[in-house]
Image (cartoon, rainbow, N blue to C red):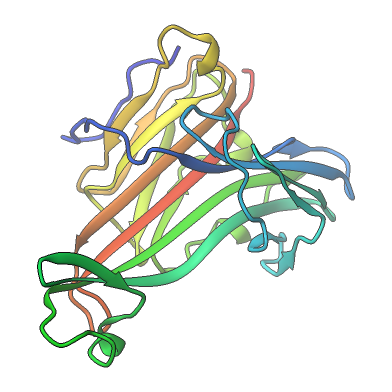
Length: 266
């Protein structure tokens, strides 16, 4: 089981599930010693961590190589319960495996007492809204699901923040996460630490435990959350942030991420 999470400063625990089904990508190996190795990738959405329930499309699955260049993954299969991919890595360094949805815009409104919606941003919606529409609101949405794989020597290029949307950085390199050592994370929105990001930390095997052992958290004023794992294994962070943020294209923003990672034996 995990030790009680240490949330820096005065972060508050939050309640409730972030979503009915959580999507994740999970490589068969997080650390490898042999260049040109192959890995298998599982992707699914489910109610329990790493318990496959719904297969998902992998057309957007990419591998970012140690130099930052992107490689589209073509050896994929979408099943009923989970989807799979075979990926060959290159030389030494850290890779980023990512399944991301592009920015999308949903405009909701009411017409004659009924709630409706359309796919359009603020600049586009006026031409599509029917006459008499009320309570009009546009939400900008984006999601990312990712993991890191390291071959021999860890590198940092694919860990750098891009400055767009919700991103995660860590005090520890992903290849260096070890049981009984504190893991500290910072959640960033558009390149800056963000308070109020709500998340759930979970770990593999909850199907076989009476207590799931999940930890719910909310980032502090510096965007931080930390915990100390008592045991090695595979972990998952799912987090989201939503807020009023009026721009030329939206009234609100909703961002979400899932991050799978491995904690090694001491």
